Image (cartoon, rainbow, N blue to C red; front, side):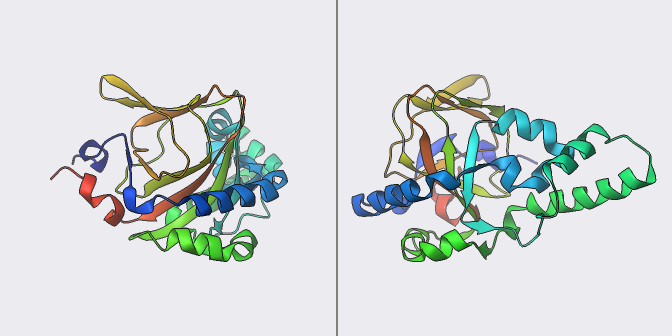
Length: 238
């Protein structure tokens, strides 16, 4: 069966989700207030590690975020040491390691499921008026929402997340410039774009992609996952 990614462009501006200048300024102010609170993906989403520890480390070393919505599957009891142990002892047959690995794998599967991110965080509650005004424009059901920071002069290595039939990725750049590039490998060609603040972009995460931040400035984005394709229906090849 053909994947949905093949019927969609690598990226596209979604006009009805773009934000006005005042909303963009409010998002900038929000990020400035929250900047000390950004944490690495491994710190926030420990369920991602375990069996995915090496992949997560290689892709997200320079990638920081603040959760706006959180998974209903809890993983606070998992430590980074636990993740490292499960990764290193993945093939161990000891009873203790088998039990712990099963526990972590179960959590990992839960927090990797974008549809479980329905719980509003304290950050959402604090800035609810702002976030509600942005999310009210979406036609599909929004699930995982986060503020994301990519450090200046760093990159996210090439990887594939998921086909848009599973979840649709929308990014609203808040602080960014032309020296930060999103790169896509589409069939036999490479496509690149810089994300302009105020616009809203569909990114086709089913293709291999990377981000290269050649800028001297950190890039900050408002990232939303959507269940359903209502917001990108006009892009799908019939």
